Image (cartoon, rainbow, N blue to C red):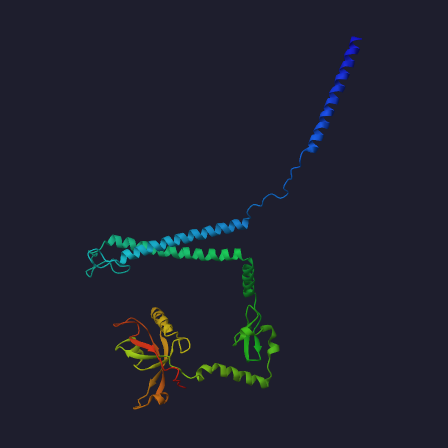
Amino acid sequence: QAAKARTTSTKTLVTTHHQINKRKDTTHQKEDSKMPTIPVASNPPASPTSSDSAKSTARQSLLSLDSRRQALEMEASAIIDELTRESDDGGAPMGIDTPLVDRDGYPRGDIDVYRARSLRKRLKEIKTDREAIMKQLEVGLVKMSATENPAAKEEEKAEMNARLAPKPKPKFDPATGKWVVKNWDGTMAGVEHGEERNFDNLSQNATTPSNLSSALAATAIANNAEATHPLVPFAVVDALAPHSPAEEAGLREGDLIVKFGSANHMNHRNLTAIAEMVPSAAGEQQQIPITVLRRQSVDNVPHGIEASAREKVELHLAPKPWGGRGLLGCHIKPYTDSQDYMEPH
């Protein structure tokens, strides 16, 4: 009986324990149902893309290169100032490329020769480093532009592919009577105004034999337009130094200039074109073609019939340093009567 009583008591305890656990679970479920729902973000915040990171890195690289360039330029400016500055006692400067020895071949005693050599060497190094940085900046800017404008990069790639593609054989153009070739963009090369025509549609622009002569005549007229255009002077030589480059070229005082290289009465910009052209030609040791109107040996010619008293003369002037001032040795001023004066061929 005692064992039976213990068994009954154990069953009662187990049943009671299960009931308590069941009540706890029910209570927890009710409490969970009453708790507010916390929304969970489906998409976490986006992190910077790799392209943005590449742009930022490229921009920082360009800024760093530009800072190095500015530092080199400031250092070069200081070196040049020291090399070209007179000494404290008023002596000659060390110079950038002047000799560091005297006439007898001995080192100059008025300067610090070792200092001069060191500065000159450093100046050459700066020049080399700056050129390398400028090339890196150019490449970096091109890459940055391509990154920020993908469409331009695609256009550049398409153009490069078109340029490298095999070209078709030349064709005969009936309109001009010439053989033409195809450009990368489909236009023609080898004839005037070929960029306005299509290489693949030559037959549509073909002319009949009767029209061919007219087309050729129109082309000849266009080519000779400059030759038949009246000469209009825009400058006059009002002073000429003896033994100067201008005198060696054959210029004379009083010559009316109608063409100075590529400058004429339409584009000389108040003689600014001549001022820009002369130093460039002197540096490259090139000659400048000049066309002038020169007064003939006619006495007592009124200004009203000056046109009939002048002849066209073509010269070649080589600007260069000489014993006098400037690179020409002559003085040129604007020709104020150019609106009233026109000289035909």
